[in-house]
Image (cartoon, rainbow, N blue to C red):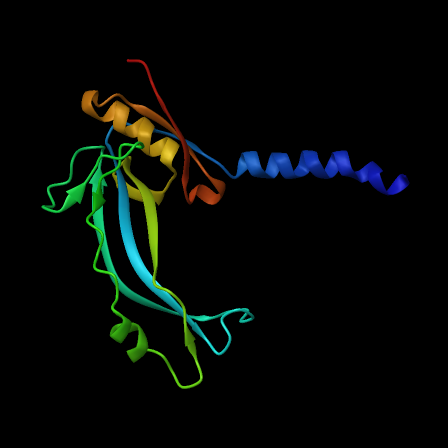
Length: 172
């Protein structure tokens, strides 16, 4: 039982380290983006059932950049979806011939899989410097709501200030 006596001290130290590694920034100029994309991929391996790390080949992909929740100007966009995001049209699925062309001797080819991905970023002005950091859906949505009125935001940055973890509007 004596081994656990250091646990509260360790938790306190880790919490303090985490809290001191984050910063809070006020931003009046900002832009949120969400890069939505579809990618076709196929897995290849000598034995797809037991292969720990099959070789993955990427085929067609398409993407659309969403900015501040506004409809992108791209001609072939679909949406918005139930999260307010616009998507590209699905690229053409690879043909059997295309899949077989990339197969090496002794390999099996899996079925083409369509991957759906979103990458969120927030760009803001910090003094004279402009910063672009990865973020999440919740921050993206908060910025989308604040953007039309240009309401200042209080941004909570992540560990080592390498991401934006939270955005809250500041009353003027």
